[in-house]
Image 1 (cartoon, rainbow, N blue to C red):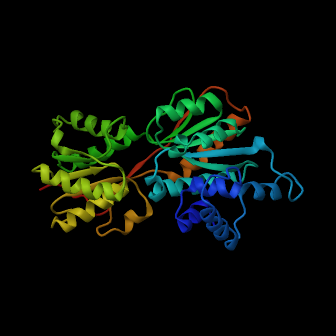
Image 2: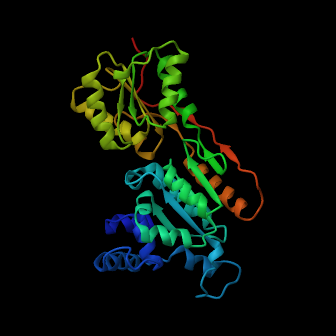
Image 3: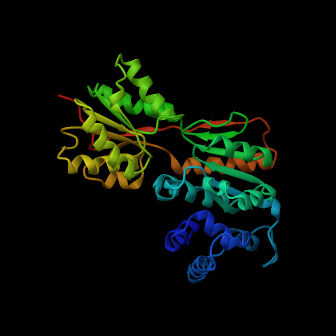
Amino acid sequence: MTLKEIARQANVSISTVSRVINGKSPSAASPEVQQRILSIAQSAGYTPNAAAQDLKNKGKTAGTPPRADQSIAVLFARMPFALMDPYFSQLMQSIEAAVSDTGYYIKYMYSSADFDNPSILQAFTEDKMKGIIILGRCEKRIVDCLTRTHVNLVYVGLNEFNPSYDQVLCNGFDVAFEAVGYLIRQGHRSIGYVGESENEVRYKGYCAALAANGIELNPDYKVEVVLSSEGGYAGARKIMSQSKGITALFCANDMTAIGAMRALKEDGYRIPDDISIIGIDDIPTSQYMSPALTTVHIPIEELGNMTVKLLIDRIEGKHNLPLKVFLPFSIVERETCIPIA
């Protein structure tokens, strides 16, 4: 059982489960919640990564406390929806699997909300973790805090990060540019955007693709929503009510697209006959939608593997200059896009 599964059963965040199981923060949760978490973990036979590594690595004696310089933290920058997004779940599973083979262990999982808690923030800054993995776009105040106290950072995501630190990217600008270009090549010119836009490269890629094909940007063809199925559901209804003539929607991720599809169906739209939809991520659910979602495949497992490799290399001094690694993507043609008549 993973920390994520324990968190789901206990109805708490992954970071809370991590702190309770590792016993580093007595105030991490109420006594009742702590007991619930520990009971679930015990019944599932869960062993923290630290103990597992202690048993398997380098001939250590069972029960010997793991060295502090082997510990790694993971920060979920996009909360709370990251916990419900299969993209982040798959990415975390890939990272956990890759770390388990290195001799290091994931000691903590934090969320961006934890940085509003002074006691947690103090514990974080004082802990001598060897490295930190950041999942998703991060607020500047959190980045500043991380970079003041920890030098071995690796960011993984679609938006570019601080150039002073290692990054593993599937370039969100290029992904969006290609997705919108795919719709344009099918004859669509009235293309709506459902997603986030502030400091978001996917929106910039959407705008650039329109401009590159001589299509004027229509402000009514954009709706600002959180990247989630709930956001997509509300966003699709809003954009279709405020805008006439849209023939296709570009949704900034698959969860948003799935929510949008539900709303459109309820409102009587036929997909793709009345409107085409494309997403980003290629989460497993997308292929089982009806119709199956056309999307952009992001190599999530490879993102996780490369992130861990880059961090361990950084920790062990195998590279000094900040590295930026780009992984490829591809359009997955399914059933939600057709050429416009």
